[in-house]
Image (cartoon, rainbow, N blue to C red; front, side):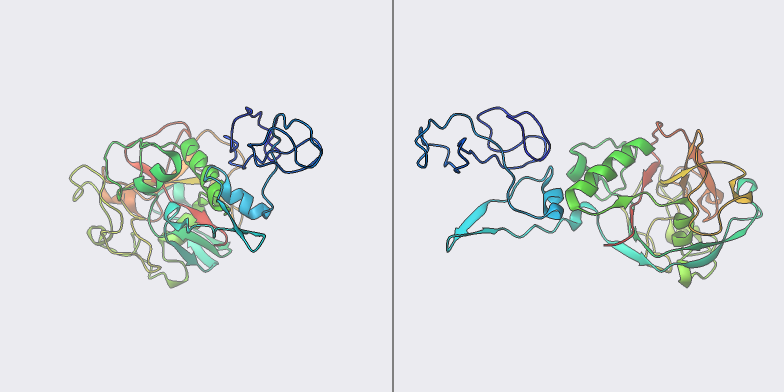
Amino acid sequence: MNCKICKTELQSNVKFCPECGTKVVPLCTCGNQLSGNEKFCSKCGNPTGKPSSVPHPISSSSQAKLLDAGVREVAEMDGEEHYEKEPDQSHLYGEMVFVQGGRFHRGNEAIRNAMPVHEVELDDFYIGKYPVTQAQWKAVMGTNPCHFYGDDRPVEKVNWEDAQQFIRKLSILTGKSFRLPTEAEWEYAARGGQMSQGYIYSGSDNLDDVGWFEDNSGAETHPVGQKKPNELGIYDMSGNVYEWCNDWYHSEYYKKSSPRNPQGPSKGDFRLFRGGSWRIGSDYCRCAYRASSFPGYWFSYVGFRLVCSTI
């Protein structure tokens, strides 16, 4: 017997599919729905035998939300089936800030791998108000890989591949399409988008106002949102933890970057992370500074932030 949704093989005594959460509804071979207790079908009289799995009559978007989240109970009212309202799952991804698209000058002529400064145009997007926290990671993944513990602290010791796994599972749980920001989206948001005041760091020319770095961190991460936000109301984009971006890294990419919605090189050895962290100096926390590592490596000073095209 297999689940009708995900085709997982089921044992005869299960009530829900262990893979996708679809409720198993016993059916007779004649198609009559059974309660699960009777020995003979009330319609045809045949022995009930083993049940078959059929999905609840719900929309495809609702089915996506039920994956790994459990199936809601059905209430019988006036002979019709009514389903409980899907719970609010925003705690899994946190507050998202709308970033109006537009043009900006990316790069810094004083940073070797961030030259030349060039104009980039981006579409609208939403970005996390804070980096992903340990509470969010635990709620989705059921684990906590961090070196510095605290539900309100940013998750760290997660590599680029771990971040992608989290995003895939979060997208299934919520029915939304989350992803990592492109490098261009990250820098545009860090600079304040269309509200940018041209600061060196994200939200200020004084890093101590907006970020945790080697001079003020006490050699550890800190709960998100304790420093001042940038022009868009986004926190911790300079310091605390570096943040993985989706792009491959190439030191010469800015010389040939696409002028509109650049996605980075098509291949490479390293993935980008941006923003600086608690363990390094102020120069590395500048909005334009670029850093990278192998996608399978993790560090106690690297986390990530979510992006979504629509909410």
